[in-house]
Length: 479
Image 1 (cartoon, rainbow, N blue to C red):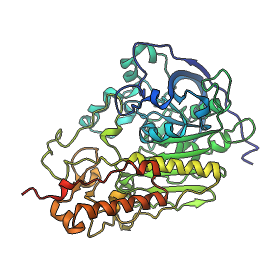
Image 2 (image 1 turned 90 degrees about the horizontal axis):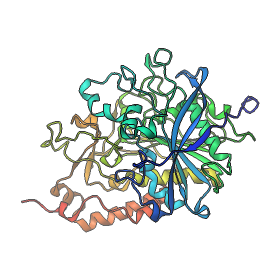
Image 3 (image 1 turned 120 degrees about the horizontal axis):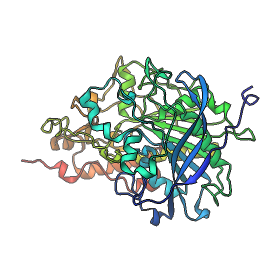
Image 4 (image 1 turned 30 degrees about the vertical axis):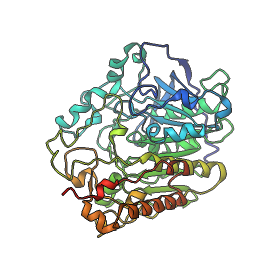
């Protein structure tokens, strides 16, 4: 029945953004968290306007009408078509600083493996009040007011971003009893972008590359767009002209779906029969679900569902922030002397994210199912912590949790008044009591790395770069 009702969305129009004196927002060529040496990687970056007519859809899934839109897409692709692996990764940029969260987490893997990447803007003119900050205290919202909405983009480069526009009507679109902060046309734009990429127009933005697959790799708040897309049956509704999927795999991460108002879901109610849907929770999101007694879903091969609770991963690092984003640290809020607050996570989240994306790719290409992981153990509304290490029991366990040198917490537990997660490093005495010597710690850590590779959560190429978290100096007393 789903195929009988399927339709092909309208094809959007594309035009290259004229050069200006500045690089695009979110450019991988700009110094910052998204930077990579594209020339060395053999990649080029191009920015285009994307225009079309897309349906305005409520949070409940009701389509009201179609409206015009103008947005931009930022493409990174191999300069040599022979290096292209046939897959394009797409993700909406986040609200704050037009950050490409998925790009930040997987960029080294993407260029190493020959993927193409397309980030795109889902934004609005600033309404009053701004629904992005519903329920926030004024002092909480203040640091972010200058890095959201089209005003931020136009302040950065008016000539480049002045034409952008989406339909937005706070009186007619609600989510969870408040104004819906998500662009009502988000789902249609994502579908049209996938259609454009997979149609292989010889005059299109991917000219010369044979696109076979499109994957969603959407982390942070805009991951909710793709939960809505799948949950409301758009995967089945919108298809390629031959009936095949527009999207070949979905990975969403670092977003507790429903947290920004609306319905709490962990599994889409209309799961695809032909496409994996993968969700990755860091310690912050899994703690949210434990505290709120939201059960973790079970994995399945039919439909293809994987849900990962990864311990020792933060919701946000300084290495993840976008253009103009400045996150308060413990020093900024007067907690710089509090040992619970002074050491931020700096663990390489990108290695786990890249391995999971690689596993999803193998599931699509080769039919090899992704690994299944146990869930974090719960005791009522609390996550169980190991009496020796102080860290969570269960879940996906990186080497720095299997062979720890710190207790890993989330912002709500530490109570530091910042959104960045912190850890409490072990004292030299505790390290020596657990491991004896640094050499023993290092040996155990290397074994944990090898095990993590075997489990499918770390790629061999990244394992070579993964250093122990503790250093020999950490084992020496300060006395």
